[in-house]
Amino acid sequence: MTEAIIVAVLSLAGTLAGSYLSSRKSAVLVAYRLEELEKKVQAHNNLIERTYRLEERTELQEEKIKVANHRIEDLEKERNQ
Image (cartoon, rainbow, N blue to C red):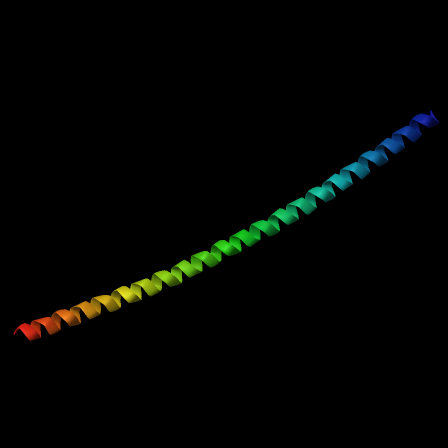
């Protein structure tokens, strides 16, 4: 009878230790994956910000080109008159 209790206690201790170590390893892996995902999200956000700034600059340059073209047209009209 005591042998059965000893075996049961050792079995329980082994199961608990295995469960704890497995859970700990899983938590470390989840933390690592979360860090990597955060890095990717940050890189994506930086790309979006840079794209937005480039779009603003492009719009400004397009407006400047329109103004320059209108000025050229006005000068050509004056010259032809």
